[in-house]
Length: 438
Image 1: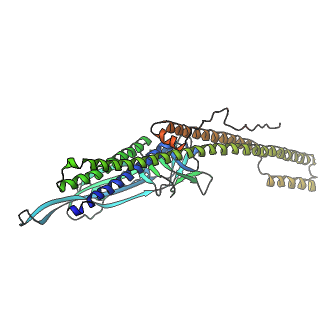
Image 2: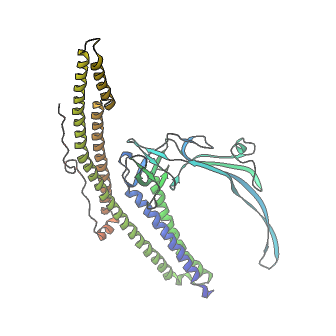
Image 3: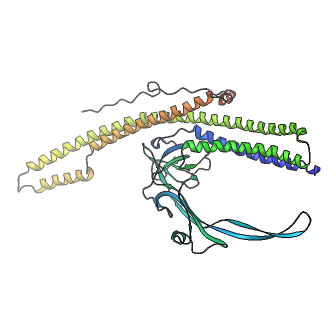
């Protein structure tokens, strides 16, 4: 057995290393969620975003078991079985003997479900979400055990049974119900059919999550996973050494330095991985701050370019409609001045002119054009406000992170500096002034 000493400890070390990688991945996802500020649906920018709202659909699905309106559901039926197994074994004296034991378990005998694109709606608007490829965390909306005497047994379950069935079934359904609060992290892109964003699968995205849990619950889950994987790594790495030494009757007190060395190596790997994760997380956060400022700049440029164009269009329409109205009034006066019974060619000429104007300009919508200008002005200012709020939120998060311990030490190593927030009086480009001629 002495020759085989390296194998078991190294196996434990390998498993411990894999658990450490899993711990660092869970920590990375936790920090990613903490880095992302929650966006309003009307302020969704292209890239990774975080949304909170309710699940909405114009044509909701009806779940199979609970018969409730949903946007996504999955169900299954499990059937219980039990059997007695007889096995042969050799006892400590070398005698062959037999014994019986009972096995039991659950087997899925039926399953199904449906999913569809749906909207995340908040107090500002709604954004389309395409759930294909997302990690779904639905809520349990139906769970019931029953026997053959219950109508549910055959009404929603299959007619046939599994081998050694005890004729007891478990009906389970998970779903995202209509109007249910949800939490979404995913990459936004432009929709193909209209100018609007949507959240969809992207192979380059760090996360695509649709959950009925709150952000705090999701973050807590990743935090717990980080600690559990870390503890498992320590137990496996050191435990395999301890177990192997015990099997080879080595005094544990003589092996303590080795155990500490193994734990130290694991701690060093974990620490290096943690610094790497934190540094990359801070760089990602800094880039999001830059992206936030770019969005502010884009919206300010939009206002600068859009408003004068809209004003000129409306002014042109006003002048154009004033000309048309003058022409119509002149034609009508000609028509009224024509004596009855003598309307002949004059009447037909005037009528032809009126028909031509109606064909070319069927409606004069000055009021609607002014309303459109007002809506675009309001929308532009809202976009600027949302972009500014996004920037200030992500910049505050970044500034807080690089000042808190222990992230502060990693930030100093990377030379990361705080970013000033935007104030109402100093961040905007000069507003575009305009006035309409009477």
